[in-house]
Every structure is written in C-alpha cells, then in structure tokens.
Image (cartoon, rainbow, N blue to C red; front, top):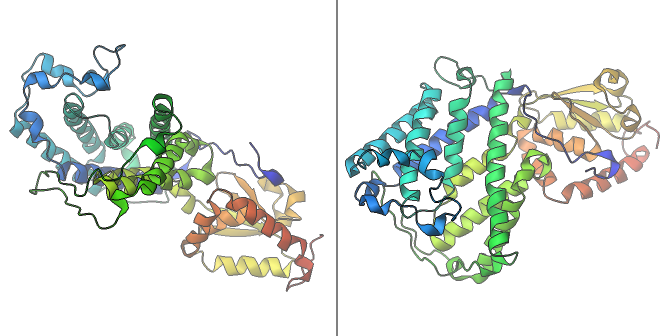
Length: 421
C-alpha cells in the first residue's frame, strides 16, 4: 500500500534489527510495575476458600470442542488433579511473592528470574479465577509481557549487573518488542473480530454501559477496599458515551494487528483502546486502566532514540534556516544534517530531493517532504505534540498538500530558494 507521492505507509516493524534499549527498558519497567500494582490492588484469597467443585470452567466460557480447556494446562490447574487445592493463606503467599518479584524486576534485581517467577505464579492465580467465575481479561497481555521478558537474554535488561544504557543497540532489544506487538496486536484483533462474529457490527449500539455502576468497590491485598469511585458526572448514565466507547473499542481492537506494519497509526489504535478503557472505568467502575499502560508500549518509543539524518539543499537559504530552527529543539542530539550533494551513499531518490526535504533514519528508512518533518518532530521533545498530530488519521494528507504548496512557492519565500520549481 502506497500513499500519493511515493511515501510508503506499509513499513513492517521487523523481527531481527538492531535497536536501542530504550523500548525494551520501558517494557521491563512498565510490565513489572503493572503486575506489582495489579496483584497488590486485588485480593485473590477467595479462591482458596472455594470448594474444589467450583473450579470446573463454567460452560459459558468454553467450547464443546474443548471438553478440557487449554487454560487447564497453560495455567497449571492440572496440578490439582493430583494435589489438594491451596488454602487462602497459600494463595495470599503466592500473591505477595508476585508483588515482591515484580518490584525486584522493576529495580533490576535478577529481572529475568523475576519475570519467570511472576509469570508462573501470576498465570497460576489468574487461572484459578478463570476456572471458577472469571473470563479472560486484559491482564492476559501483562502476563504475556512477563513471558516475553522471561525468554529475553539476561544481558538485555537494565540492572545492577548490566547497568542502564537506553541508547545501547542490540538485536536482543528488538525482537522481544516485536513479540509484544505481535501478541498484543493478535489478542485485541481477535477480540474485536469475535465481537463482530458473535454479536455483529452493531455491537457498539447494543453495549449499554450506562447505569451499570455508580460506585466500584473491590477488596485489595493490603487495604480494606481497592477503590471506590462515586459517579462524578453524568457519564455513567449516558447512552451516547456507551456508543462512543463501543465504537472506539471495536475500531481499536479489530485493527490493532496493524501496529506491526502501519507505524503511522500505532498511536491511533493505542489511544482508541485507552479511550475505551477510560469510558468503561467512568461508566462501570471496572478498572482496565492498568492495561492501558501495556497498550501504550505498542508505540515505537525507540523512534525517539534512533538517530536520523536530514537531507536538504545547502544553497537554499530558506531551507537552511528552517533546518537550523528545527534543530534548536534537538536537545538529545538525535538529528544530523547533510547537503543533498553528499547523500549519494544513502540510497535516496536524488530527483525527489531536488523538490523535497529528506530524512534517513539509522534503520535505513527514508522519508520525504511532510513525512520527513514528522520524523524530525518525533526526535524533538518540545515538538512531540506536532508528532502526535502528524499521526492523526488523515492529517498527513493535509500536511503533504501544505508542504507541496509551500515548496511550489519557495522562490518567493525569504531566502530566495534556488531549487528548481
């Protein structure tokens, strides 16, 4: 798929590619913090009080094709075919161990081992809920993040032994992030398609979140209640808000797999899901907001760390001044510049560079015109609002038209550009 002007929209994320450690470090920090918060803010000890016959996987949640659901094995519930089920105190011990291990991983203390411990115990405790009275929920993607971390090379993590080097490049920092994109993208896309298949495209209009909860109360491990949210607005009674949340959810979920190959729309899909989670929280008191942190990891944070080279015509006064102005915001030195006459070794379209500015990032990706400016904005923190605007669906097409209009009149702009029209 190509956009007008030859600017490629289809850019696969790739599997084996040298990348800065920044994104992997964020996966480590956010993944561990979320699991620590999740297991500290809930109380799973009730599953140690239920009789054994309560853990039979309710029929509403399993297909007749699977008389024994795969979750029976993947969450290690099969152990209780041979062993007595744990008491409430044992479940509490598991929960506390998850919290301690997750905090250790966040601090960089044996993070790979911590990820394995958190995954095994958190999946096991979650399986208790799923085998009794709970459906698969957003915490699943957090568990997947722990599995990815447990499989990652020990040298990839930040920690006391490995240090903290967010700009250090390695293939081992990239493929775990690819796996995260693949797992989260597949999870939500399957969820969205499932809604369409089972309910229909009209699902947002039949959701009816309004009025289902005016307060939310849950038990927590270390407190008497996890949260109590009084209705602070009319959102919980608004059918319109329910429809908006449903539409955001359906669009965000069904298209989420596109984060693997449509980089411009990663933020759109992520924010769609965050919007849906916020509305469910406001209207039902159901807290999916923690999952939003994992979803926001599905934006290419390494784009802010990758170096890029701006290609421009050094004889064009207006162009040169524009580049100098933008580079004032390059606080972290992520941008280089080079005259187009010296860019023959970069594999760029020299003819296009006679009419448009170019940017080549350190992965060899090439951008021209308005698309190039979007890459420049991404690397300048003060210009991130513009980088976000560039990623609003449809905005780039407007930006390209504006850029073309300016480029077409550059001879009349200050600096008397000498490039051919």
